[in-house]
Length: 228
Image 1 (cartoon, rainbow, N blue to C red):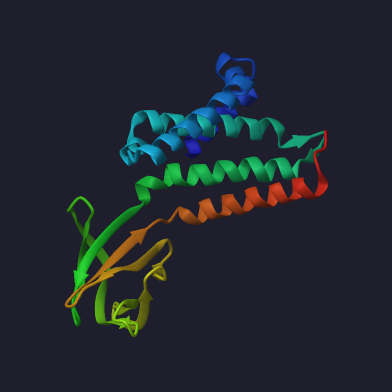
Image 2 (cartoon, rainbow, N blue to C red):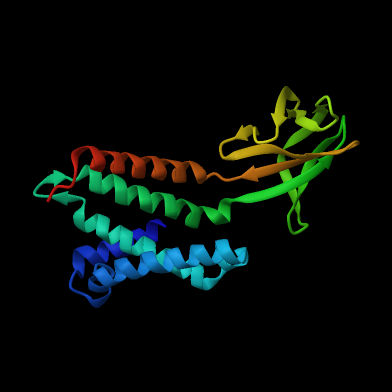
């Protein structure tokens, strides 16, 4: 990511009139990158073909959009010696939120493990069946299923320990943060076992920061109105 940004910033500073720079900064590049991204997202959402996001076409599209955003920011973040904060927050926030998912995908992982009461493990299994060695010892102390008066389950909870420390409670949609960017979720419970899911997404905090920047810039634009 650093090399990608450095190359285009160098081109902007030293080859500003070159064909690649002029095209990336053209209205055609801005419009086409946004339309293509929207079309790709709609296709994935409506068709259910999630494997499309791993294709060269989708990866190239995201890189194209990020390149346009980067040069737009470099060109317009400052004008007449003053920083354009609203412009910078909106565009940099959009770039950061999109880029975090793009560059962070190789660092993300998901694995699951089935455990019974008293079990201790140091490995889990990825969705494709591969074995994943955990950097800590995961123990299941107990799990509880609470039911309503008519016999329907209303609450699932597991009590776990990490490297013997704890215990801590994990419920559905309320994971336990093991370390930066890594959390343990409770996904299902049966009579004799429960399934824990280990999700590692260290770049998601950058995506969150980008979304906050984008919202802050939009709020500033709403309060002060457009300025030329």
